[in-house]
Length: 182
Length: 398
Image 1: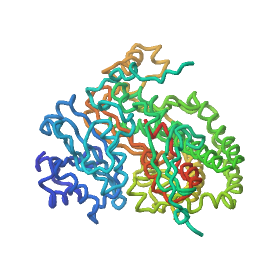
Image 2: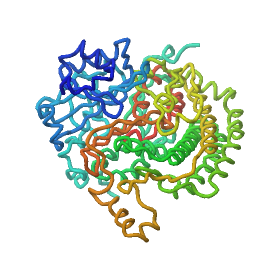
Image 3: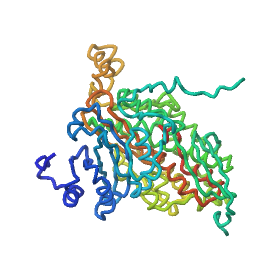
Image 4: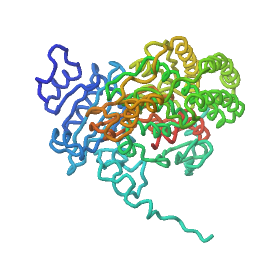
Protein backbone atom coordinates (compact mmCIF):
# COMPACT_ATOMS: atom_id res chain seq x y z
CA UNK A 1 0.00 0.00 0.00
CA UNK A 2 1.41 3.35 -0.96
CA UNK A 3 1.65 6.65 0.84
CA UNK A 4 -1.26 8.13 -1.14
CA UNK A 5 -3.72 5.86 0.63
CA UNK A 6 -3.19 7.67 3.91
CA UNK A 7 -5.77 10.30 4.82
CA UNK A 8 -4.03 13.64 4.66
CA UNK A 9 -5.98 15.58 7.29
CA UNK A 10 -5.43 13.24 10.21
CA UNK A 11 -2.04 13.25 11.86
CA UNK A 12 -0.23 10.01 11.34
CA UNK A 13 -0.10 7.77 14.43
CA UNK A 14 3.21 8.02 16.21
CA UNK A 15 4.00 4.35 15.79
CA UNK A 16 3.70 4.54 12.00
CA UNK A 17 5.77 7.68 11.87
CA UNK A 18 8.51 6.12 13.96
CA UNK A 19 8.47 2.87 12.03
CA UNK A 20 8.77 4.74 8.76
CA UNK A 21 11.69 6.71 10.10
CA UNK A 22 13.56 3.76 11.57
CA UNK A 23 12.40 0.62 9.79
CA UNK A 24 11.06 1.83 6.45
CA UNK A 25 12.59 -1.10 4.56
CA UNK A 26 10.84 -3.64 6.79
CA UNK A 27 7.39 -2.17 6.35
CA UNK A 28 5.41 -4.05 3.70
CA UNK A 29 2.02 -2.49 4.41
CA UNK A 30 0.21 -0.39 6.96
CA UNK A 31 -3.44 0.06 7.66
CA UNK A 32 -5.88 1.11 10.30
CA UNK A 33 -8.68 -1.33 10.80
CA UNK A 34 -11.51 -0.67 13.28
CA UNK A 35 -9.39 1.49 15.53
CA UNK A 36 -6.33 -0.76 15.56
CA UNK A 37 -3.18 0.01 13.65
CA UNK A 38 -1.99 -2.92 11.56
CA UNK A 39 1.49 -3.20 10.11
CA UNK A 40 2.84 -5.94 7.89
CA UNK A 41 6.52 -6.56 8.42
CA UNK A 42 9.11 -8.34 6.33
CA UNK A 43 10.02 -11.66 7.88
CA UNK A 44 13.77 -11.03 8.03
CA UNK A 45 13.35 -7.88 10.10
CA UNK A 46 10.45 -9.12 12.25
CA UNK A 47 12.56 -9.57 15.36
CA UNK A 48 14.27 -6.20 15.02
CA UNK A 49 10.97 -4.39 14.55
CA UNK A 50 9.28 -6.14 17.45
CA UNK A 51 12.28 -5.41 19.65
CA UNK A 52 12.11 -1.78 18.60
CA UNK A 53 8.39 -1.59 19.34
CA UNK A 54 8.94 -3.04 22.77
CA UNK A 55 11.99 -1.09 23.84
CA UNK A 56 11.37 2.33 22.33
CA UNK A 57 10.48 4.53 25.32
CA UNK A 58 7.82 6.48 23.44
CA UNK A 59 6.03 3.43 22.04
CA UNK A 60 6.67 0.86 24.81
CA UNK A 61 4.57 -2.01 23.50
CA UNK A 62 5.60 -4.02 26.54
CA UNK A 63 2.72 -6.48 26.54
CA UNK A 64 2.66 -9.26 23.96
CA UNK A 65 -1.03 -10.13 24.01
CA UNK A 66 -1.07 -12.95 21.54
CA UNK A 67 0.85 -14.80 18.85
CA UNK A 68 -1.02 -16.82 16.30
CA UNK A 69 -1.13 -17.54 12.59
CA UNK A 70 -3.64 -17.61 9.77
CA UNK A 71 -3.47 -20.05 6.89
CA UNK A 72 -4.41 -17.92 3.90
CA UNK A 73 -4.32 -20.75 1.37
CA UNK A 74 -8.06 -20.43 0.70
CA UNK A 75 -8.14 -16.64 0.70
CA UNK A 76 -6.98 -15.60 -2.74
CA UNK A 77 -7.02 -11.84 -2.11
CA UNK A 78 -4.68 -12.11 0.89
CA UNK A 79 -2.38 -14.49 -0.97
CA UNK A 80 -2.03 -12.13 -3.90
CA UNK A 81 -1.30 -9.15 -1.73
CA UNK A 82 1.81 -10.63 -0.14
CA UNK A 83 3.55 -12.57 -2.85
CA UNK A 84 1.62 -15.82 -2.25
CA UNK A 85 2.85 -16.25 1.30
CA UNK A 86 0.63 -19.01 2.66
CA UNK A 87 0.83 -18.13 6.34
CA UNK A 88 0.50 -14.90 8.19
CA UNK A 89 1.95 -14.88 11.69
CA UNK A 90 -0.01 -12.37 13.75
CA UNK A 91 1.30 -10.63 16.87
CA UNK A 92 -1.07 -8.56 19.00
CA UNK A 93 0.73 -5.95 21.06
CA UNK A 94 -0.49 -3.60 23.74
CA UNK A 95 1.16 -0.57 25.26
CA UNK A 96 0.29 0.09 28.90
CA UNK A 97 1.86 3.50 28.56
CA UNK A 98 -0.08 4.67 25.50
CA UNK A 99 -3.09 2.39 26.18
CA UNK A 100 -3.25 1.38 22.55
CA UNK A 101 -3.10 -1.78 20.53
CA UNK A 102 -1.03 -2.72 17.53
CA UNK A 103 -1.27 -5.71 15.26
CA UNK A 104 1.91 -6.87 13.59
CA UNK A 105 1.65 -9.38 10.77
CA UNK A 106 4.49 -11.30 9.22
CA UNK A 107 3.93 -13.19 5.94
CA UNK A 108 5.60 -16.60 5.84
CA UNK A 109 6.06 -18.70 2.73
CA UNK A 110 5.38 -22.40 2.82
CA UNK A 111 8.84 -23.34 1.56
CA UNK A 112 10.53 -21.51 4.44
CA UNK A 113 8.45 -21.72 7.58
CA UNK A 114 10.94 -20.14 9.94
CA UNK A 115 10.38 -16.92 11.86
CA UNK A 116 12.63 -15.54 14.56
CA UNK A 117 11.34 -16.36 18.03
CA UNK A 118 10.56 -13.47 20.37
CA UNK A 119 10.94 -15.47 23.59
CA UNK A 120 14.00 -13.34 24.37
CA UNK A 121 11.78 -10.26 24.43
CA UNK A 122 8.70 -11.64 26.14
CA UNK A 123 8.71 -14.70 28.39
CA UNK A 124 5.05 -15.19 27.61
CA UNK A 125 5.85 -15.80 23.94
CA UNK A 126 7.12 -19.28 24.76
CA UNK A 127 3.80 -21.11 24.88
CA UNK A 128 2.12 -18.87 22.33
CA UNK A 129 4.80 -19.75 19.79
CA UNK A 130 4.64 -23.39 20.77
CA UNK A 131 0.92 -23.39 20.08
CA UNK A 132 1.42 -21.70 16.72
CA UNK A 133 4.04 -24.34 15.87
CA UNK A 134 1.70 -27.10 17.03
CA UNK A 135 -1.25 -25.87 15.01
CA UNK A 136 0.44 -24.50 11.86
CA UNK A 137 3.97 -25.86 11.79
CA UNK A 138 5.57 -22.43 11.88
CA UNK A 139 9.17 -22.92 12.94
CA UNK A 140 10.23 -20.30 15.47
CA UNK A 141 13.99 -20.05 15.27
CA UNK A 142 15.79 -19.62 18.55
CA UNK A 143 12.86 -20.91 20.59
CA UNK A 144 14.23 -22.74 23.65
CA UNK A 145 11.65 -25.54 23.69
CA UNK A 146 9.72 -25.84 20.45
CA UNK A 147 7.49 -28.87 21.10
CA UNK A 148 3.84 -29.58 20.56
CA UNK A 149 1.72 -28.25 23.38
CA UNK A 150 -1.95 -29.06 22.86
CA UNK A 151 -1.68 -32.06 20.55
CA UNK A 152 0.09 -35.29 21.64
CA UNK A 153 3.83 -35.44 20.97
CA UNK A 154 3.48 -38.18 18.37
CA UNK A 155 0.75 -36.39 16.42
CA UNK A 156 1.38 -35.90 12.73
CA UNK A 157 0.16 -32.91 10.76
CA UNK A 158 -0.93 -29.44 11.73
CA UNK A 159 -4.62 -29.30 12.66
CA UNK A 160 -5.38 -25.64 12.00
CA UNK A 161 -4.04 -25.66 8.47
CA UNK A 162 -6.83 -25.39 5.94
CA UNK A 163 -5.95 -28.68 4.27
CA UNK A 164 -6.40 -30.56 7.53
CA UNK A 165 -9.94 -32.00 7.67
CA UNK A 166 -12.27 -31.13 10.54
CA UNK A 167 -12.79 -34.75 11.51
CA UNK A 168 -9.11 -35.63 11.36
CA UNK A 169 -7.22 -38.11 9.25
CA UNK A 170 -8.36 -41.30 10.92
CA UNK A 171 -6.50 -40.72 14.19
CA UNK A 172 -9.64 -41.56 16.08
CA UNK A 173 -10.24 -44.87 14.29
CA UNK A 174 -6.66 -46.05 14.53
CA UNK A 175 -6.13 -44.97 18.12
CA UNK A 176 -4.04 -47.52 19.92
CA UNK A 177 -5.90 -48.66 23.02
CA UNK A 178 -4.18 -50.64 25.72
CA UNK A 179 -6.01 -53.94 25.53
CA UNK A 180 -6.10 -55.66 28.87
CA UNK A 181 -7.04 -59.25 29.53
CA UNK A 182 -10.10 -58.81 31.66
CA UNK B 1 14.40 -19.05 58.50
CA UNK B 2 15.99 -21.03 55.71
CA UNK B 3 14.35 -20.97 52.33
CA UNK B 4 13.30 -24.20 50.69
CA UNK B 5 16.34 -24.29 48.43
CA UNK B 6 18.78 -23.73 51.29
CA UNK B 7 17.44 -26.82 52.99
CA UNK B 8 17.95 -28.87 49.86
CA UNK B 9 20.18 -31.93 50.15
CA UNK B 10 20.73 -32.76 46.51
CA UNK B 11 18.56 -35.84 46.22
CA UNK B 12 15.88 -35.44 43.56
CA UNK B 13 12.44 -36.87 43.34
CA UNK B 14 9.99 -36.42 40.49
CA UNK B 15 6.37 -35.97 41.47
CA UNK B 16 3.60 -36.13 38.94
CA UNK B 17 0.89 -33.66 39.96
CA UNK B 18 -2.21 -34.41 37.93
CA UNK B 19 -3.74 -34.77 35.36
CA UNK B 20 -6.17 -36.38 37.80
CA UNK B 21 -5.72 -34.64 41.11
CA UNK B 22 -8.39 -33.08 43.34
CA UNK B 23 -6.55 -29.77 43.46
CA UNK B 24 -6.06 -29.32 39.74
CA UNK B 25 -9.74 -28.52 39.08
CA UNK B 26 -9.66 -30.02 35.66
CA UNK B 27 -7.17 -31.98 33.69
CA UNK B 28 -3.95 -30.08 34.29
CA UNK B 29 -0.61 -31.71 34.85
CA UNK B 30 2.53 -30.42 36.48
CA UNK B 31 5.73 -32.44 36.75
CA UNK B 32 7.53 -31.35 39.88
CA UNK B 33 11.17 -32.03 40.56
CA UNK B 34 11.56 -32.08 44.30
CA UNK B 35 14.38 -32.11 46.74
CA UNK B 36 12.73 -32.99 49.99
CA UNK B 37 9.82 -30.61 50.11
CA UNK B 38 11.35 -27.89 47.97
CA UNK B 39 10.42 -27.50 44.35
CA UNK B 40 13.50 -27.39 42.12
CA UNK B 41 11.69 -27.38 38.83
CA UNK B 42 8.09 -27.37 37.73
CA UNK B 43 6.99 -28.26 34.21
CA UNK B 44 3.34 -27.62 33.41
CA UNK B 45 1.72 -29.67 30.66
CA UNK B 46 -1.39 -28.55 28.81
CA UNK B 47 -3.60 -30.13 26.20
CA UNK B 48 -5.58 -32.80 28.03
CA UNK B 49 -8.84 -31.02 27.31
CA UNK B 50 -8.01 -29.88 23.79
CA UNK B 51 -11.26 -29.86 21.86
CA UNK B 52 -10.42 -27.96 18.70
CA UNK B 53 -12.64 -24.95 19.40
CA UNK B 54 -10.67 -22.80 16.97
CA UNK B 55 -11.03 -25.35 14.17
CA UNK B 56 -14.76 -25.64 14.88
CA UNK B 57 -15.08 -21.90 14.44
CA UNK B 58 -14.15 -22.30 10.80
CA UNK B 59 -17.10 -24.63 10.25
CA UNK B 60 -19.94 -23.11 12.29
CA UNK B 61 -21.73 -19.91 11.46
CA UNK B 62 -21.40 -16.86 13.66
CA UNK B 63 -24.44 -17.52 15.83
CA UNK B 64 -23.81 -21.25 16.14
CA UNK B 65 -20.38 -20.58 17.59
CA UNK B 66 -21.88 -18.89 20.67
CA UNK B 67 -22.67 -22.39 21.95
CA UNK B 68 -18.98 -23.28 21.77
CA UNK B 69 -17.98 -20.20 23.78
CA UNK B 70 -20.04 -21.50 26.73
CA UNK B 71 -17.58 -24.33 27.07
CA UNK B 72 -14.39 -22.25 27.23
CA UNK B 73 -14.40 -20.80 30.69
CA UNK B 74 -17.25 -22.87 32.02
CA UNK B 75 -17.36 -20.94 35.28
CA UNK B 76 -18.47 -17.74 33.60
CA UNK B 77 -20.00 -18.67 30.24
CA UNK B 78 -21.92 -15.38 30.11
CA UNK B 79 -18.65 -13.44 29.93
CA UNK B 80 -17.44 -15.58 27.05
CA UNK B 81 -20.74 -15.16 25.19
CA UNK B 82 -20.39 -11.42 25.65
CA UNK B 83 -16.77 -11.22 24.51
CA UNK B 84 -17.39 -13.28 21.42
CA UNK B 85 -20.47 -11.46 20.10
CA UNK B 86 -18.81 -8.14 20.81
CA UNK B 87 -15.97 -9.15 18.50
CA UNK B 88 -18.41 -10.19 15.77
CA UNK B 89 -20.43 -6.98 16.16
CA UNK B 90 -17.32 -4.83 15.94
CA UNK B 91 -16.35 -6.76 12.83
CA UNK B 92 -19.83 -6.11 11.42
CA UNK B 93 -19.63 -2.48 12.49
CA UNK B 94 -22.94 -2.48 14.37
CA UNK B 95 -23.80 -1.25 17.83
CA UNK B 96 -26.45 -2.95 19.91
CA UNK B 97 -29.23 -1.09 21.72
CA UNK B 98 -28.59 0.64 25.02
CA UNK B 99 -30.83 -1.75 26.92
CA UNK B 100 -28.97 -4.71 25.44
CA UNK B 101 -25.62 -3.22 26.46
CA UNK B 102 -26.86 -2.80 30.02
CA UNK B 103 -28.26 -6.33 30.16
CA UNK B 104 -24.95 -7.69 28.93
CA UNK B 105 -23.00 -5.75 31.53
CA UNK B 106 -25.39 -6.93 34.21
CA UNK B 107 -24.91 -10.56 33.20
CA UNK B 108 -21.16 -10.21 32.76
CA UNK B 109 -20.77 -8.76 36.25
CA UNK B 110 -23.01 -11.39 37.81
CA UNK B 111 -20.95 -14.06 36.11
CA UNK B 112 -17.79 -12.39 37.41
CA UNK B 113 -19.29 -12.77 40.87
CA UNK B 114 -20.13 -16.41 40.20
CA UNK B 115 -16.64 -17.07 38.84
CA UNK B 116 -14.87 -15.41 41.76
CA UNK B 117 -17.14 -17.20 44.22
CA UNK B 118 -16.30 -20.59 42.79
CA UNK B 119 -12.65 -19.66 42.78
CA UNK B 120 -12.88 -18.53 46.40
CA UNK B 121 -14.61 -21.71 47.51
CA UNK B 122 -12.26 -24.11 45.78
CA UNK B 123 -9.05 -22.20 46.49
CA UNK B 124 -9.94 -22.18 50.19
CA UNK B 125 -11.01 -25.82 50.07
CA UNK B 126 -7.65 -26.80 48.63
CA UNK B 127 -5.98 -25.25 51.64
CA UNK B 128 -8.35 -26.98 54.05
CA UNK B 129 -10.91 -24.25 54.73
CA UNK B 130 -14.06 -26.23 54.16
CA UNK B 131 -16.64 -23.77 55.55
CA UNK B 132 -15.67 -21.09 53.03
CA UNK B 133 -16.53 -23.51 50.26
CA UNK B 134 -20.04 -23.96 51.67
CA UNK B 135 -20.61 -20.23 52.15
CA UNK B 136 -19.42 -19.28 48.67
CA UNK B 137 -21.40 -22.05 47.00
CA UNK B 138 -24.51 -20.96 48.87
CA UNK B 139 -24.17 -17.49 47.30
CA UNK B 140 -23.23 -18.87 43.90
CA UNK B 141 -26.36 -20.98 43.91
CA UNK B 142 -28.49 -17.84 44.14
CA UNK B 143 -26.72 -16.45 41.09
CA UNK B 144 -27.21 -19.65 39.18
CA UNK B 145 -30.94 -19.46 39.89
CA UNK B 146 -30.96 -16.01 38.32
CA UNK B 147 -28.97 -17.30 35.33
CA UNK B 148 -31.33 -20.20 34.93
CA UNK B 149 -34.39 -18.00 35.00
CA UNK B 150 -32.82 -15.57 32.51
CA UNK B 151 -31.17 -17.89 30.03
CA UNK B 152 -32.87 -21.22 30.63
CA UNK B 153 -29.64 -22.93 31.61
CA UNK B 154 -27.24 -22.93 34.53
CA UNK B 155 -24.04 -23.61 32.69
CA UNK B 156 -24.55 -23.66 28.93
CA UNK B 157 -26.15 -20.24 28.90
CA UNK B 158 -25.64 -19.20 25.22
CA UNK B 159 -27.39 -16.00 26.21
CA UNK B 160 -26.07 -13.47 23.74
CA UNK B 161 -26.82 -13.30 20.04
CA UNK B 162 -25.04 -11.32 17.37
CA UNK B 163 -26.92 -8.03 17.59
CA UNK B 164 -28.71 -8.68 20.84
CA UNK B 165 -29.53 -11.25 23.48
CA UNK B 166 -31.66 -14.38 23.52
CA UNK B 167 -34.51 -12.63 25.34
CA UNK B 168 -35.17 -9.74 27.65
CA UNK B 169 -34.82 -10.09 31.42
CA UNK B 170 -37.66 -12.03 33.05
CA UNK B 171 -40.30 -10.31 35.18
CA UNK B 172 -39.00 -9.94 38.68
CA UNK B 173 -35.35 -10.19 37.64
CA UNK B 174 -34.62 -6.75 39.02
CA UNK B 175 -35.97 -7.69 42.46
CA UNK B 176 -34.01 -10.93 42.49
CA UNK B 177 -30.76 -9.22 41.53
CA UNK B 178 -31.30 -6.32 43.92
CA UNK B 179 -31.96 -8.72 46.74
CA UNK B 180 -28.78 -10.57 45.91
CA UNK B 181 -26.53 -7.52 45.75
CA UNK B 182 -27.99 -6.16 49.00
CA UNK B 183 -27.30 -9.33 50.91
CA UNK B 184 -24.09 -10.34 49.21
CA UNK B 185 -21.65 -7.89 50.89
CA UNK B 186 -22.82 -9.19 54.27
CA UNK B 187 -22.25 -12.75 53.14
CA UNK B 188 -18.80 -11.86 51.83
CA UNK B 189 -17.99 -10.36 55.19
CA UNK B 190 -18.43 -13.81 56.71
CA UNK B 191 -15.70 -15.04 54.42
CA UNK B 192 -13.49 -12.09 55.31
CA UNK B 193 -13.81 -12.96 58.98
CA UNK B 194 -13.01 -16.59 58.20
CA UNK B 195 -9.97 -15.99 56.02
CA UNK B 196 -8.52 -12.50 55.76
CA UNK B 197 -6.94 -12.37 59.21
CA UNK B 198 -6.83 -16.12 59.68
CA UNK B 199 -3.33 -17.12 60.73
CA UNK B 200 -3.31 -20.37 58.76
CA UNK B 201 -4.68 -18.73 55.60
CA UNK B 202 -2.12 -15.93 55.83
CA UNK B 203 0.74 -18.36 56.43
CA UNK B 204 -0.31 -20.43 53.44
CA UNK B 205 -0.78 -17.54 51.01
CA UNK B 206 1.26 -14.51 52.09
CA UNK B 207 4.52 -14.33 50.16
CA UNK B 208 3.60 -17.54 48.34
CA UNK B 209 3.98 -17.63 44.56
CA UNK B 210 5.00 -14.00 44.18
CA UNK B 211 5.63 -12.37 40.82
CA UNK B 212 6.86 -8.85 40.12
CA UNK B 213 4.94 -6.39 37.95
CA UNK B 214 7.61 -6.50 35.21
CA UNK B 215 7.63 -10.27 35.12
CA UNK B 216 3.84 -10.37 35.14
CA UNK B 217 3.74 -8.13 32.07
CA UNK B 218 6.48 -10.12 30.36
CA UNK B 219 4.56 -13.35 31.01
CA UNK B 220 1.38 -11.78 29.72
CA UNK B 221 -0.59 -12.05 32.96
CA UNK B 222 -3.87 -10.15 32.94
CA UNK B 223 -6.85 -9.64 35.19
CA UNK B 224 -6.67 -10.13 38.96
CA UNK B 225 -3.26 -11.83 38.70
CA UNK B 226 -1.78 -8.72 37.04
CA UNK B 227 -3.56 -6.27 39.32
CA UNK B 228 -2.26 -8.13 42.37
CA UNK B 229 1.23 -7.05 41.33
CA UNK B 230 0.23 -3.39 41.44
CA UNK B 231 -0.54 -2.68 37.78
CA UNK B 232 -3.89 -0.88 37.81
CA UNK B 233 -5.01 -2.06 34.39
CA UNK B 234 -8.55 -3.08 33.62
CA UNK B 235 -9.86 -3.27 30.05
CA UNK B 236 -13.24 -2.08 31.27
CA UNK B 237 -11.51 1.20 32.17
CA UNK B 238 -8.74 1.39 29.59
CA UNK B 239 -10.86 0.57 26.53
CA UNK B 240 -14.45 0.82 27.76
CA UNK B 241 -16.57 -1.45 25.60
CA UNK B 242 -20.35 -1.72 25.64
CA UNK B 243 -21.52 0.84 28.25
CA UNK B 244 -18.75 0.40 30.80
CA UNK B 245 -17.87 4.09 30.49
CA UNK B 246 -21.26 4.93 32.04
CA UNK B 247 -20.70 3.09 35.30
CA UNK B 248 -18.22 4.00 38.00
CA UNK B 249 -16.13 1.48 39.82
CA UNK B 250 -12.67 1.17 41.35
CA UNK B 251 -9.88 -1.07 40.15
CA UNK B 252 -8.40 -2.80 43.18
CA UNK B 253 -4.66 -3.46 43.09
CA UNK B 254 -2.27 -5.40 45.28
CA UNK B 255 1.38 -4.76 46.05
CA UNK B 256 3.26 -8.05 46.34
CA UNK B 257 1.74 -10.14 43.55
CA UNK B 258 1.48 -13.16 45.84
CA UNK B 259 -1.41 -15.54 46.40
CA UNK B 260 -2.73 -13.44 49.28
CA UNK B 261 -2.91 -10.30 47.13
CA UNK B 262 -4.65 -12.20 44.36
CA UNK B 263 -7.17 -13.27 46.97
CA UNK B 264 -7.71 -9.70 48.22
CA UNK B 265 -8.01 -8.28 44.70
CA UNK B 266 -10.68 -10.81 43.79
CA UNK B 267 -12.56 -10.18 47.04
CA UNK B 268 -12.68 -6.45 46.34
CA UNK B 269 -13.62 -7.00 42.71
CA UNK B 270 -16.73 -8.80 43.87
CA UNK B 271 -17.79 -5.76 45.90
CA UNK B 272 -17.08 -3.51 42.90
CA UNK B 273 -19.13 -5.78 40.65
CA UNK B 274 -22.05 -5.44 43.08
CA UNK B 275 -21.74 -1.66 42.71
CA UNK B 276 -21.79 -1.94 38.91
CA UNK B 277 -24.83 -4.19 39.04
CA UNK B 278 -26.69 -1.68 41.22
CA UNK B 279 -25.87 1.18 38.85
CA UNK B 280 -26.98 -0.87 35.88
CA UNK B 281 -30.31 -1.65 37.54
CA UNK B 282 -30.79 2.02 38.45
CA UNK B 283 -30.14 3.28 34.93
CA UNK B 284 -31.24 0.50 32.63
CA UNK B 285 -33.32 2.08 29.85
CA UNK B 286 -36.44 0.59 28.31
CA UNK B 287 -36.57 -0.37 24.69
CA UNK B 288 -35.80 -3.27 22.41
CA UNK B 289 -32.97 -5.69 23.20
CA UNK B 290 -32.15 -6.61 19.62
CA UNK B 291 -30.91 -4.37 16.85
CA UNK B 292 -33.60 -3.65 14.31
CA UNK B 293 -31.87 -5.21 11.38
CA UNK B 294 -33.64 -8.21 9.96
CA UNK B 295 -30.48 -9.44 8.34
CA UNK B 296 -28.83 -9.88 11.72
CA UNK B 297 -31.34 -10.71 14.43
CA UNK B 298 -34.32 -13.03 14.48
CA UNK B 299 -37.76 -11.38 14.31
CA UNK B 300 -40.23 -11.84 17.17
CA UNK B 301 -41.93 -15.21 17.20
CA UNK B 302 -45.34 -13.55 16.67
CA UNK B 303 -43.90 -11.85 13.62
CA UNK B 304 -42.42 -15.06 12.27
CA UNK B 305 -45.72 -16.90 12.65
CA UNK B 306 -48.02 -14.00 11.71
CA UNK B 307 -46.41 -12.24 8.78
CA UNK B 308 -44.82 -13.47 5.60
CA UNK B 309 -41.92 -10.98 5.88
CA UNK B 310 -41.25 -12.14 9.42
CA UNK B 311 -41.24 -15.74 8.25
CA UNK B 312 -38.82 -14.96 5.44
CA UNK B 313 -36.49 -13.03 7.76
CA UNK B 314 -36.67 -15.80 10.30
CA UNK B 315 -35.36 -18.33 7.81
CA UNK B 316 -32.92 -16.04 6.09
CA UNK B 317 -31.06 -15.34 9.34
CA UNK B 318 -30.27 -19.03 9.84
CA UNK B 319 -29.69 -19.96 6.19
CA UNK B 320 -26.11 -20.35 5.09
CA UNK B 321 -25.06 -17.35 3.06
CA UNK B 322 -28.04 -15.19 4.02
CA UNK B 323 -27.51 -14.41 7.70
CA UNK B 324 -24.73 -12.65 9.54
CA UNK B 325 -21.93 -11.94 7.08
CA UNK B 326 -19.27 -9.54 8.29
CA UNK B 327 -17.28 -7.75 5.61
CA UNK B 328 -13.87 -9.05 4.66
CA UNK B 329 -11.21 -8.23 7.19
CA UNK B 330 -9.94 -9.12 10.62
CA UNK B 331 -10.51 -7.81 14.08
CA UNK B 332 -9.18 -8.42 17.57
CA UNK B 333 -11.53 -7.62 20.41
CA UNK B 334 -10.53 -7.95 24.06
CA UNK B 335 -12.83 -8.00 27.05
CA UNK B 336 -12.14 -8.18 30.76
CA UNK B 337 -13.33 -11.65 31.67
CA UNK B 338 -13.19 -12.68 35.34
CA UNK B 339 -9.79 -14.27 34.77
CA UNK B 340 -8.25 -11.54 32.66
CA UNK B 341 -8.03 -10.51 29.05
CA UNK B 342 -10.22 -12.74 26.92
CA UNK B 343 -9.60 -11.87 23.29
CA UNK B 344 -11.23 -13.04 20.09
CA UNK B 345 -9.33 -12.55 16.85
CA UNK B 346 -11.69 -13.16 13.96
CA UNK B 347 -10.73 -13.23 10.30
CA UNK B 348 -13.70 -12.93 7.95
CA UNK B 349 -13.67 -13.75 4.26
CA UNK B 350 -17.09 -12.18 3.81
CA UNK B 351 -19.06 -15.42 4.13
CA UNK B 352 -21.37 -16.58 6.89
CA UNK B 353 -18.63 -18.61 8.56
CA UNK B 354 -15.48 -17.18 10.05
CA UNK B 355 -12.31 -17.87 8.09
CA UNK B 356 -10.37 -18.15 11.32
CA UNK B 357 -11.24 -17.66 14.96
CA UNK B 358 -8.46 -17.35 17.46
CA UNK B 359 -9.23 -17.28 21.16
CA UNK B 360 -6.73 -15.58 23.41
CA UNK B 361 -7.37 -17.22 26.74
CA UNK B 362 -6.08 -15.68 29.97
CA UNK B 363 -5.54 -19.07 31.65
CA UNK B 364 -3.07 -20.24 28.99
CA UNK B 365 -0.62 -17.49 29.88
CA UNK B 366 -1.26 -17.78 33.61
CA UNK B 367 -0.48 -21.49 33.58
CA UNK B 368 2.70 -20.81 31.65
CA UNK B 369 3.94 -18.49 34.40
CA UNK B 370 3.38 -21.15 37.08
CA UNK B 371 7.00 -22.43 37.22
CA UNK B 372 8.21 -18.89 37.78
CA UNK B 373 6.04 -18.68 40.88
CA UNK B 374 6.67 -22.20 42.16
CA UNK B 375 10.37 -22.83 41.77
CA UNK B 376 12.25 -22.36 45.00
CA UNK B 377 9.11 -22.78 47.07
CA UNK B 378 7.60 -25.71 48.92
CA UNK B 379 5.61 -28.52 47.37
CA UNK B 380 2.55 -27.67 49.45
CA UNK B 381 2.58 -24.17 47.94
CA UNK B 382 1.86 -25.70 44.54
CA UNK B 383 -1.75 -26.14 45.55
CA UNK B 384 -1.99 -22.62 46.95
CA UNK B 385 -0.45 -20.98 43.87
CA UNK B 386 -2.41 -23.06 41.38
CA UNK B 387 -5.57 -22.25 43.27
CA UNK B 388 -4.78 -18.54 43.33
CA UNK B 389 -4.29 -18.43 39.54
CA UNK B 390 -7.68 -20.04 38.82
CA UNK B 391 -6.56 -21.91 35.72
CA UNK B 392 -9.60 -23.23 33.88
CA UNK B 393 -8.79 -26.26 31.76
CA UNK B 394 -11.53 -25.65 29.21
CA UNK B 395 -10.13 -22.25 28.44
CA UNK B 396 -6.50 -23.36 28.72
CA UNK B 397 -6.77 -26.11 26.11
CA UNK B 398 -9.77 -24.99 24.07
